[in-house]
Length: 434
Ligand code: H2U
Ligand code: ZN
Image (cartoon, rainbow, N blue to C red):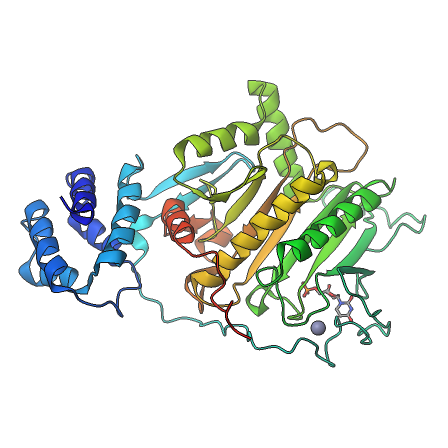
């Protein structure tokens, strides 16, 4: 049997009886099929295979399905369908548990075909100059706060000119007027990190060596800020793209360091500590070995890191970078491990840009153990990527309505998104541009 039909046969065996034909068709067609070439021989045999499995399918529908599929695409789609078919989870609405936060998320795979007539995001322009005289972050320019940037040639860190937190000045804040009107002083330091002097680059277009310099800067910042007695937590993050509210296209990220531990890292810390106390094991070490054994949500990996779509992901193409080795923070990484981190970050960034052939927007950030001087043996540090795009470069998922009032919900199952990301090239779609 031709490999293609072998695949199809296996898929149908898996799928029929368990999943309705409509679902198989959905997987096969997915959403990139319009420009597909026709090949007569395959079309005919495919039609036969479809008919054998789904004799009740209308002739018209079958002709349509078989007409739009071409061999290489078919193989990819079918392997996607096969992966999906192997999942034991039903394509029915269900909820999944996030053990890192203790929250549930609703998954509604049957809803992926609903029409969209809402807001369309404008893609970020990719054609930027290497230097922009009007950019606040380019080397040698004057920032909005009046300071002049040096002529930097590698990642450059400065104190945010408009910080959300201010250092401790020794004064207590106002007392709480009531136990229901609780106020506490919050102090800290906010910094901005320019990843590169080049205005036109991003993590996807920088070399691994250059991204490693960003990782070096993160490590130095985490160590330095974390060592201060007035800093209990260091949050390193990046907003990329106008769709995520990023204020400037120059490649940059931020660091906010607080006295107290912010809500989400505190929740993750509590959940990890509770898991360790109950099971005597690290939550994320255990989760990672489970994912490695199953393979269905893994996108890429190297010796030190695994990148996957978490089982409980809320955002359509959400991913998690997990270090294989248990550890609380990047402070512990050696040079080789930092290179490995830069490598998976670059590979992931390229796949993200290739997904919709756009400068892919996201919020990403490191979750690491607090720097409050206490011991945190349960903490397994990691990086979250939370991208808003849903079905194209212009349709964003909105966490509104039910999500704001009840619980997060997603349509496309995390496994389908992992398949999509896994199937993409690691050569940037604009790599051949001058
Ligand atoms: P975002 O693009 O994620 O908003 O981050 C940019 C940060 O850079 C933002 O916090 C700071 C803003 O306050 N900034 C300066 O500190 N100086 C400037 O001249 C421009 C922007
Ligand atoms: Zn710039």
